[in-house]
Image (cartoon, rainbow, N blue to C red; front, side, top):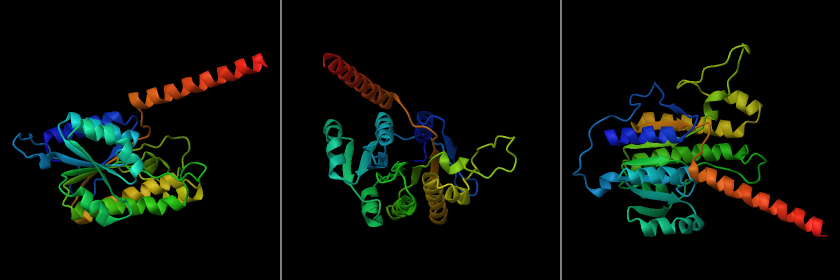
Length: 262
């Protein structure tokens, strides 16, 4: 993105991700967005940004911030259900479009990225069959998707990419001295052997996916920034949870009344 407004956008995104650890690996030649004053004479294409998984809580939060900053947003989803969820947004705002693309297909992604100056990759994977929502089989899928996004960015000549990783990609490390608390910083990576031994598949998927993204970005000269949140929250998520709790409470009260009546 390469301008002061883009730098400010990243700062706002950092503030949105509570307890986050932003990662710009020092071995890469270009680690941060450069700061320059934005010009007002660029055409609309120069303000077009793509967001993957735009129907998710994080994706929608990023989209709202981008729109407030004057960007046009192209949202990527992979199913018709999410297209319908976003129909009202696209109808109400001419600066929002929705396209379907598959994270498993580089060509599909590269077509969706055409004309975009930046990509926010917020997609994550869950497996309903797994007790924790993420199983061993998802690790390779997550890595492949990360690689596909990077390759698609290069094909579509996207300038910069912001990847949402996880704090779990940093914190699982071997400790020889249990009396000290390890410091987590930009150089911290979770130990893959430890993740495999403890079956921490989500952490393993995130660390491998992020490493793969950095490797491809370095090879292609793509400017990459990764954000490693420990918790994602916000007003919309809070109110959604509050509504669910109230509904559960009402349901319990009705059940009690029914039991008393009987």
